[in-house]
Length: 343
Image 1 (cartoon, helix red, strand yellow):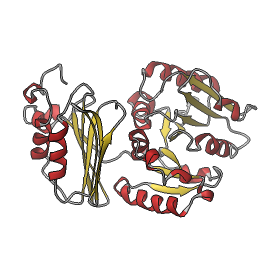
Image 2 (image 1 turned 120 degrees about the horizontal axis):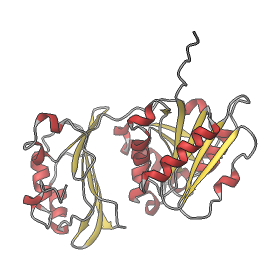
Image 3 (image 1 turned 60 degrees about the vertical axis):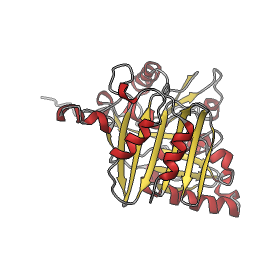
């Protein structure tokens, strides 16, 4: 009797990064490392309707490249991505898969999609890679954008491109960036002209120790079984712990509006924190907050996909009081928090 062994899961590398970071250049060098007897596939996402990057990748036998145009596969409807990926896998049967989201994408949302149960037997997710342009690290207008920061937080490996042209200001900014994101336990690599060994990226994806739960006020009203359910709808509260740091965060629906002055007062009153970052829809427009112990920065911001805040501490803290004060800054009545409409 012949026994068929199960097909091994395909290693999948997500190569993310902000606009102009050098993702495609890095991908070109990674693809050049393909063994002759293997087939590698690439799924690329262009925000516009005309794809260009696909033409820059190998077109010869042994490579299968597919583009998904129009919008972001991370945060738009999952159906086009699911169809494109399923077709790519069935038609090319690759030994390794690379996914390059648009520079305007949210890789953490894409990762959530690809780690759902129905993909787990097919895909072996590798460490999520985010590419940052080392020659732009001195430019705060670039690095302080919310999407840029979201992509960095999602990364398990950060590759610094254009390392050969970094100035002294860029190097100082890089060291500050590594310190700022120390809580996320990332591996930082430098690449000149996109050249880096694929072996350095062959690390299994490791999910963070994130406990996503309903808001603390809601948890008291729910049964133990309910609070153990993964919360996918807003609002929710989460906590991450790594290397002696504690990161607490909240996400609220985009439609919620907060009183700007009350919110600013609350954040300025906090004690003993290492970092506070947030973006809120306020009565004075969208505002971003970027606090460190030496400087409190806040400014008008582009519209975000939701309201969110993260606070980094080096010790444990009971967050119930802070959450209650945070909810008191909301313009709508906080008594409606548990209604089906707001959830």
